[in-house]
Image (cartoon, rainbow, N blue to C red; front, side, top):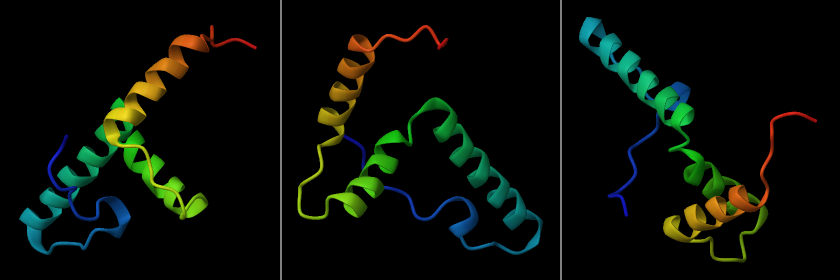
Length: 82
């Protein structure tokens, strides 16, 4: 399991001033994009959607979610066509 989640990233993050602040903002945005590209942010998106659509149910733990996602991917093989 991971430690506490970082604060806001992307457009919601506060903007820092000066050249170092702009550099840090760029690095935060790059980190955010990298997490999206690698799929690392998928569980975070699941939690947001789950809270919105099923507020009365407990969400899966991160470990349970990744196992369910892997099982789904293995049983629903797609060639990427049609």
